[in-house]
Amino acid sequence: MHYTTLISASALQQQLANPDYVIIDCRFSLADTAIGEANYRHGHLPNARYAHLDRDLSATITSQTGRHPLPDFRVLAKKLGAWGVGNHSQVIVYDDAGGAFAGRLWWLLRCLGHDKVGVLDGGIQHWQQQGYVITTVLPKPQATVFRPYLNDSYWLTARQLENALAKKSVCLIDARTPERFAGQQEPIDPIAGHIPGASNRPFQLNLSNGLFLAPEQLRQAFIKLMGNHSPEQVVHNCGSGVTACHNLLAMEHAGLNGSKLYAGSWSEWIRDTNRGVARC
Image (cartoon, rainbow, N blue to C red; front, side):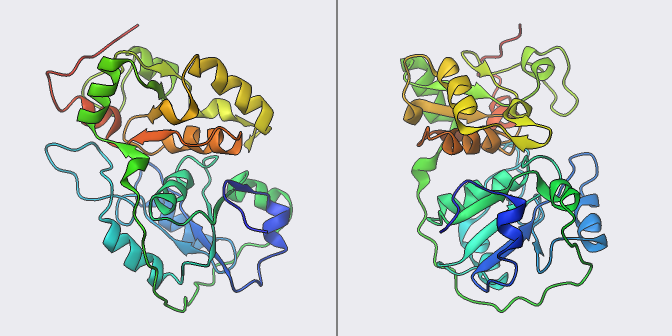
């Protein structure tokens, strides 16, 4: 059996000795970009590697990009190989934010043609609540070659999104909190509001007590938002293209396959003052 959306703590615990499993810690904080790695060194799942959102899972910010541009996929593929990820590996990713950051690497691996990747449901908190072990021992990965098979149809550019919205051919779902979506507050980006035509589905609604809702509950929630659109016509965005992956993961877990990401998201959208801004 392999995992392509979520894996439970109990299922992962049974596979800790499996050499085909590669575990990657994705803990991160936008408020303190060093604390995730510091927490990793103070305790992580056995044999887990660490992936830093800014350093490993994003490219350098430019005047035209959002806050977390897509990484150079060739560089990421080399890092994956250095972490011991091969094309047949079962990758497990986790964080301490309900999957908000682990979802980014889950999605990036899918873009690279690697579907055998699961997010640890409940993250490290649920793992510890179940009494499972954590360690401070740093792993010594056996490097291998990861061959990427990039599929750039998994995301939209700003221009592609503009055209699709003009044709009303997509359903855009924003994963930010209601206050940020409405433009009532904006703690991170210089302009408040949302992309005109978007609906709001805060990613936190996918969770209950830190665990993902049942697939049928997620399915009904997203079907209500989608209206007459198919899953393939759904596009997700957030502040910088990170937490939007949580909604994409939730849809996949619910069997609503094929939605896409507007990778630049709000922080890229507002770089061009000609693009519309909505507030409500």
